[in-house]
Image (tube, rainbow, N blue to C red; front, side):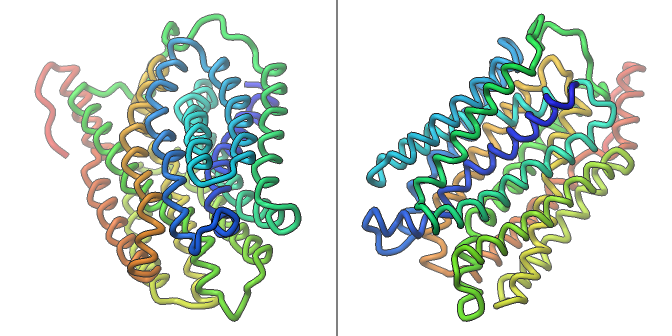
Amino acid sequence: MPRSLTLLLNVAHALDHLFLLIFATSVATIALEFGFARWEDLMPYGVGAFVMFGLGSLPAGRLGDLWGRRRMMLVFFFGIGAASLLVALTRNAWQMAAALTLLGTFSAIYHPVGIPMLVQRAPNPGATIGVNGLAGNLGIAAAAIVTGFLVQWIGWRAAFVVPGVVSIACGFAFMAFAPRETEPPAARARKAGVDLPAPLLARVFAVMTAAAASGGLLFNMTTNGNSQLLAERMRGVVEDPATLGTLLAAVYAVSSLAQVVVGRLIDRMPLKRLYLSIALMQVPLLLLAAQAQGWWLYVALIGVMVLVFGAIPFTDAMIVRYVDDRMRSRVAGMRLTVSIGISSMAVWLLGPAVKAAGFSTLMLALAGVALLTSAIVSWLPGDAAVERARAAAAAGAPAGAD
């Protein structure tokens, strides 16, 4: 794949995550303008973006396989850019909710379409996914720092306008650099890296979906709540919004490197063992973050986010390893619809949960979610079980359990 196209696909991942977090980063300022006494009361109005981020993945993945991934990526760039400009024009909470829901609909395109497009010819898919994950998380970091400065210097509307214009410009660049597809992915003759028997493939799909749902709940709760968590726990130490945004961006920038490391390890280590280790290590750090204040909270938050981001590449790695390229977008779309549809509830629950119980209780609950993720991942078949199942299928005998 040409480097220019690879770069644009990675930039698209950064933009996708950036757009989804602009509202959460600027919610306190928007709440004041819209007449809300507390940011927690406005936060539920953003849930539509995350619901559509999940529900929209199913049709987006289907269109990516059957209509073409290049065409869908053009819809992504132009659509999400225009939706962001529309958000900047809103004047009340319900207009904001509708515009964010539209933005979430276009944001659903990237993961089931852009990532399969990126890895369809990658010789080391784990490393490719790791770098792509780094790009996505740098988008999260950019949401923290760019939004913070734009809100302080110009206003919250500029925080939506500037990336919207950038996305539309990237759409024109993608149109110029991305070669036209001679046939849609569904018509290609390209198999999965590991050909699994149907029962084991169903088990892998169930595990990746359930683990992505619980892991997504943890991801959405933290990334959407970290800005307000830092503001509360750093009170009296650092209170300037732009400085807090810079500190949070540094957390995400450092944490993003974990995906590069994990991506490379996926190409070299047993996937189940690596995934389970990362999920289990999240628990003690979340417990520490539940009680920490000031700079100790900041240190704990770095550790939490390193592990949260480090868990992200596994689902895409499983899809690349076990799913035929002709249907990867559809499988990714189905998985995202279920997992993100569930985890999107985090955005709706975040404000009311913090208002009722506080961040300490929330972080304790997230430690429980991390334990649940670990239990789900433990059901993933190990490499030995995969080999036995493949051998049994080839011999026409039933496969043994892990």
